[in-house]
Amino acid sequence: MKIKNMIAACTLVLCAMPFAASAELSKAEWQAKVGECANNPSAMKATIAQIPASEQASFVAKVNEAIAKKPGSDEAKAADFYAVNKAAVSGATDKSAVLAEVFATVPVEYLTDINERFATELFSRNANPEKPVSDAAFVELSTNALAVVNERCEKSENGDVRQAFAALMFIRASGGSPEGLADVLVSQMTDPQAKESAGGWISDALGSDGKDASYDSMLSAANAGDEPDHSVVLQMTGPSEVMESLLADLQAPGTQSASGSSTGMGGGGFADSGVAGAAGPSSLADGSDSSLVPRGTIGNPDGVGGNSEGTNAGKGNPYYTDERGSSGGEPTEPSPSPRPSEPSDYVK
Image 1 (spheres, rainbow, N blue to C red):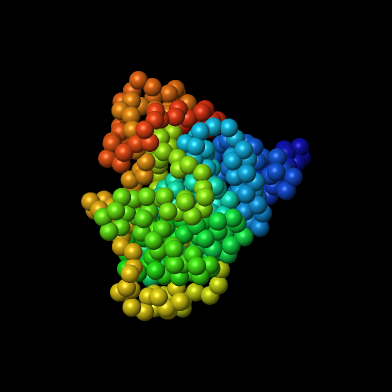
Image 2 (tube, rainbow, N blue to C red; image 1 turned 120 degrees about the vertical axis):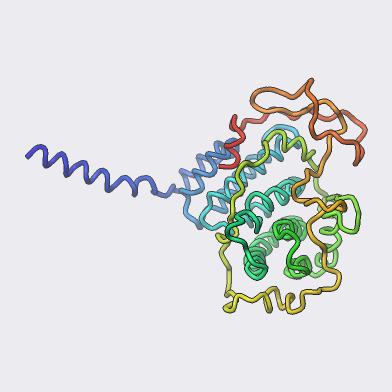
């Protein structure tokens, strides 16, 4: 009899375990985890998965506010904003809403890193070669997601520049196809005056027409802070070892095309693929993919930055080049900032 009772008790415990593991955090519980998640991308990914979908965006806003208050160099903060927000989007239930919160609450100067790395590491249409994303599907997913982002950014300071950064991310993620995608995404921006400027901002950022790629026009329009040195940020976070494919997880806010055709999407912008004045593919003048090239360069042949194992002082700088010039001063050593010891913590 005792054995039967023990078996029954064990069965009840095993049946209850999945429910316990998936129990949602209360608002008080997730608020208590804001500080931890601001310092640890792995904690962010695990925590946001336990938060009700309707509260996930609010949590991301709180965490970004905490990161903004942390001491450290521009590069240290850029690394934190990138890694923690990537983890948030990866672990979120409502990825469109959380992506919108990222572009609405991360300081504009740090969206320079986020738009590039999200484009290749989270939303690239080429992330899974075995399951290619068609032009029509990419247009539908990107325009639907951008509608959510634009609506949220309307309520943020410098919302027009934030919307442009989000559009730029999808343009990079598209791999340069279909032609005219830039015009269609810009046409979704909610500020008529911003639409006139956004084409130039995006062209500058992509280095179109043989120009040097630059975020200066976007950051100037937003009166943003200093752009971080992207190659230092890359050294601090490490390159991503895992390319996730989250495009299919972007939820459409409204009705979708029943036919799956790109005609009629984006306000009919793809009825004719040859849109005059469309920005070209996401590439530099030499034909390389601009979304894979760090924007900044370090004007010093010696290594700077570092990770949990120490600084790179005295080592050669693999990113050194003087092609884009320098500010004329010595690179600033990033201030230490708590983060996981392994690069894989940023991508899992």
